[in-house]
Image (cartoon, rainbow, N blue to C red):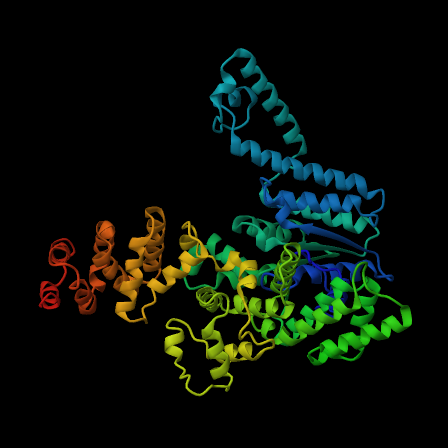
Length: 623
């Protein structure tokens, strides 16, 4: 299994990016500088930050102080600006690169930041006008009258506010807001110059997880207070989320046709670096390397990566084959002996490398170039694998992987396949026909009609042909155990809330099969009269849910209305809930099959209550 966070091993071939960014960040000529690492969710921004941190701290010719800040951790703080400034100053205090004499200046700046935050909080909460008169602090709003119910309470508030006044005024620099910002910048800049640090590099991660106001406040804190000589800020963020936050903050400029988000980002970020979406070949390579990471010891994994880099696999954009990985691993075994993690066998590793090697390309095409999605796919695979092992379910890993591919790239087709196998005791006849016909292996006497197989989705796209052709073939395989493991993905919440067993659900599907002869459907519906009342009610609920999912099932309800008198009232109410504008002549002709009184009542209801076309209803009602 893999944690859903940044990797410390470069399996995405991001090292060249880290080297370049480090080279720029430590350049005296370039600072002060703010670098933006732009990439979508899960694209590997945090992994790249880790590599940059590793590279910058290993600089031997310069004294670099690196501080890493997770912006999301300060989401609950009152003020984003002061929270960021406090975090950076705390990091500087703990960093060995700053000499002892810097500690006093750091403390002074931290006190200043703390009083900024306290001042903002007090002003926001307010104190009563009576205390204002006693202390001389300008009038502000009283927060809670219960604080002044007794002489003791009043005196307590007076003492607190008086103390605040004395301390706040002592800590506050004189002058207006602009002068205070300038003063902080000067003190912060002098602190860095006074130290022996050549460059302070601040890595900010997860900014795009914060709320829009906090995102803007954080960016403004960097620009106004912290961007001084010998500093470099490297911010990992999703540009789309940052742009949304800016437009939300300044909507009036958007209305003027000004591209406010682009201009704003350019003011904050001097060097934007965009992390490209991984190509399908990159995702497949990443998947195979993740498998290797799970099975191999760290040294062996690093050797594998190094040999692949020497071959130029990543630079050339080549696809790594499972055979290539197994060959390199075998070479390592011959030199160093066993290189597998405890409890891992060579056979197990080879089997799973080969499985994902065979389906890797089609999996990669479904994961949208996203490393995090790749991890989640593999985590789900191994969770289901382990569930099967715990319950002693016999299964084939390759079949599990192949079905998960369909689940990921087209959930509707996956659910449709679930229905097919459900109706045929785990072995869907429709899938057998698809494999034979789409893959060019038709049998004589078995005509093929895609429209009959699937009315709402297509099984004949190029992607589906690739999936169908991927080994193993699924014809005559019992798929029910695999869908059991994936029941969280296939269960229709409404239908499966009905208390039905497998046979009863199968029976509902048979009743609602619109392709069968009407007389056969009627016989199936009539069998409900032979059921006990509890079962019959549950089955009817299931039929209603099918109708709610597909309005074409109105045909089935019409038959139920005629054959199941105990449900006529409920069915009639369903007919009355239809959208009057969507009732065409074909539906009216169906309703005409109802008994005369029911049809007449329904007609009058739609004409009088929903302004339906009387002529259309009368035309449909003609015998």
